[in-house]
Image 1 (tube, rainbow, N blue to C red):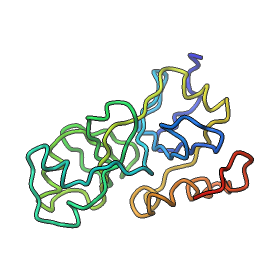
Image 2: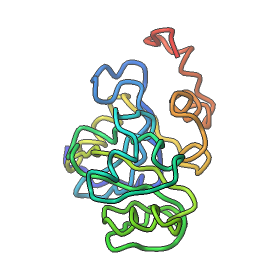
Image 3: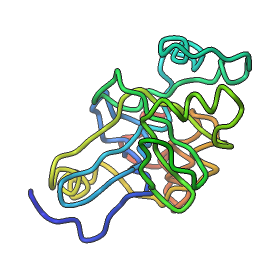
Image 4: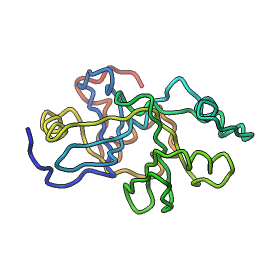
Length: 189
């Protein structure tokens, strides 16, 4: 179970197969932000939390007059550290605490990106998530071997433009998989 990953799956999507019944990950799409011999970390990108961005900004002492920004849904990024915020954004700018996932895709955990967003100086496209998903060394490789996930290269349209409820089937469709035709599919969108 401590196998070294042959290739990093960072900047790929994990798409839960219909047979995955863990309530934390059933019908989920996870953007892998980091993947190496020590394990993996990602953000669920197709589940809204009960919060709007305005509530999160208010909790960290930031105010914004932009109603569309305040009303943006906050993602439920995963069961690990649900109190911690992650900003997934485009662009090549690094904020105080940024991790480059790809050339123009970053994840940032510092407040400065939120401050810039409230001033209209933030990234062009960004989503905020509370919590993340993580796997220990070899755990993700084991789950992939058990056929609980398929992997799909990430793309900006899916991450930032597609409605949350369409992302699960759309992500699988990127590699020609129709989840509705799989044996354990429950028959609802």
